[in-house]
Image (tube, rainbow, N blue to C red):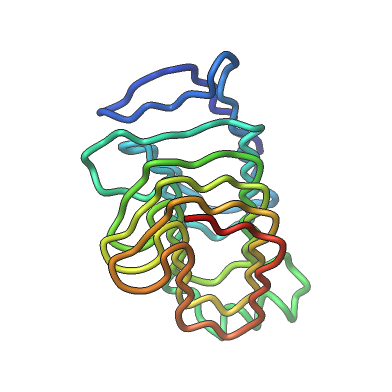
Length: 189
């Protein structure tokens, strides 16, 4: 199933979602059958999953000017455990997967993970994203990853002027049980 979000200069509770002169087009693709709920609140896409998801921003520029403390993407599955993971592997079923690519994310703020907050297990790929002026009150100015039993790949991104009060001005990774690849990224200011 595909979900398409198309907006140009729309404001929602103080958030500005825009991409200059062309429409902001975000394509969300569910890769296989799932029980997924997608809630768009205060500019945040909250994904509670049993599925695999691809999000292609199609060069969209997404900026928040809201007083609300909220990551743009919140991806959670804290109940995902070893037994369930092994059942996925043994039955050769695609395990939960999240891909976010081709967008600019700026001005988001949260307690942890200013732009992207991941708490739970999925094969994670973040690529070709321009993170600008994202901040966290605690850790992970742009990205916060926790409790991931699978691999995380953060590649070909730019982090500019991202900061956190405690750990990980751009990226904070905690409690990982598998491979983390951070490759060909630019960190500025």
